[in-house]
Amino acid sequence: MDLRSFLREKITAWTEASRRHTLLHLAERSRLGYSTVRRLASGDGEANLQRLLQLASVIMSPEETRQAVQDFFPEARLGLERPFRFFPNEKLDPISSKEAMLAVALSCPDGGIDSKELEAIMGTRAARCIQSLIDAEILCRQEERVKLTADYFFDPNPERVLRWMGYVLDLFDRERSDQMGNFTSLRIEGLNDKGIERLQEVMTLAEKSIQTILDDKSCRGSQSVATVMVSTVLNPKAPSP
Image (cartoon, rainbow, N blue to C red; front, top):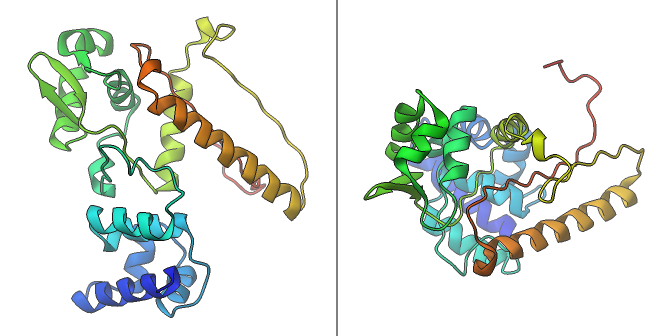
């Protein structure tokens, strides 16, 4: 069975499970266009890894998603060879502020961070923020420390990822902007389809190289580092922030 047939069967099973499970509802929750979902439900349209993950966040369990990625995209480096967890979209909703993103970032190093140190860094809003992340099973307490519950989590919601990028920029350590660990670059050019395809290949390779570093336990340390990669066809009608 190919991916297109697989997705068609999963979508059909999901819509037949409840009257409330409409294709329009699926499109809204998966952040895919309705026409895209309708074509996939008919066994047409382009079926790729991104669309699989966006649909899976709604219609499949974490275990089913993991197996599907392994079956159809064995080359994808999504942490399948190490402790791994997909958080459903609603589980990630508590990361809805700069403070929440900071709490997650500071809890990343092996062993996590001392809870009192975390509260001292974050200030008065820390306790409620940390507890919301613990309730969502994104963070956990181990004695006096707070740490991530998994080595890796993935969210296919583009809008939320873009919002998190904004938090990362707010937390950018400008005092260290010219030191090792900080890299900023902006390039704008007009490209055709060939140029866009080559750019995608280069950025995908870079992303895989970054993941190799993150996976290397000899590189682990106490400094919380965020990497952000963005490539987009610019929208001249985008609203001002």
